[in-house]
Image: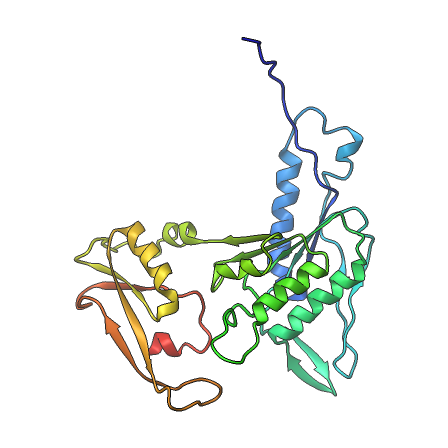
Length: 288
């Protein structure tokens, strides 16, 4: 048999790394940037002094960008430096309601629509110059509107196709409400990162007894059932579920009102209960 020569293989970067955290993700973006600076500074292997790795190690990978607004509430995206040929990562948290802007002299809280519009503004400001664009969106925009049950829009699918048309190569999100939304863009990159390991590893209550006699995993509704089953299988405990009994003869605020929450499962008396859901909006399900 022919002898195979062993040698070191190095992966060249796609382009110079550029990180653009929007206002909604500024603190998280700063942590990611600090980690990247430290990690790349410590990496050493032959060939890193070549021209291909120019700009690989820097003091910061954050590209200055902003989305100022006019008094009317309209806005624009501004980049403070060139992104030509760079590998761009844009970070946006569409659920950050603490961000505000002024319209007609009054402070306004930014909605998910406002955050998403700012994301598109910055992509539009790049005018197809980057080598690659990745959008990191911890909470997937419009992920709750992921299926059609009547005459209604499919907002999450429209959003994904819109970002693809803008030239976005990859979309990274965490624990999407329904990961099957990737079917809207089957030929594009879509990473749905599940933080299950981090949840289980972060054990803040030291006296938990993880067995069927002392613990139970419960899903607050039908939509979260697959998450609850996954956690229950990992922990080796039983699972229970609440289902919402609705009045389908009436529509209130665009939905059928909930008559009662019914529980299916063994008794929870004397047990520690872990409730698994993908998000909290009003907290109504958790309270009930």
